[in-house]
Length: 142
Image 1 (tube, rainbow, N blue to C red):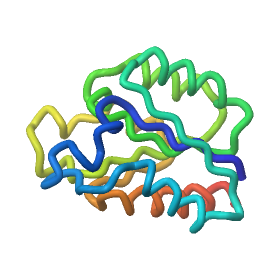
Image 2: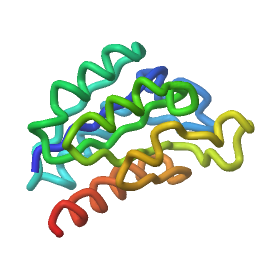
Image 3: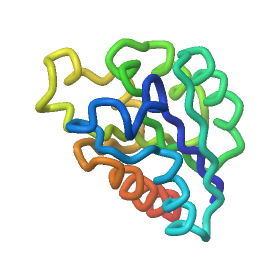
Image 4: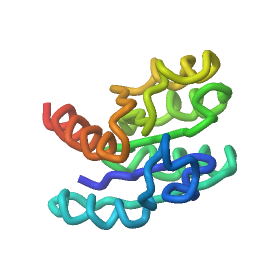
């Protein structure tokens, strides 16, 4: 399977940003581990702090890739445009969040993308991406 891992705003700061919430490991380091763990799949990584770039990437791969694991970051709680982009593509999208949204601020408990994704995981740290990959591959195999 060819799977995109798509990260939204501020996730380029993982390993340095609020380590008490997000840990002290960069995503690039973790991505190398994911590539080894899921070597039977072709994993592609893209991160942007810009909503339009995330939408463009969803449009670019949303008809040709087998799956997308997406952490929209703060856009989760604000972006109807990302929701519409996910709705408009054929590729299945799995939502991931590093922190437990239910224990965060009230505004973080609303996800505009959750209902257009095939699944959602939060609060498992970076390991949530691996769980999402496992679930995505299981669901695609059906």
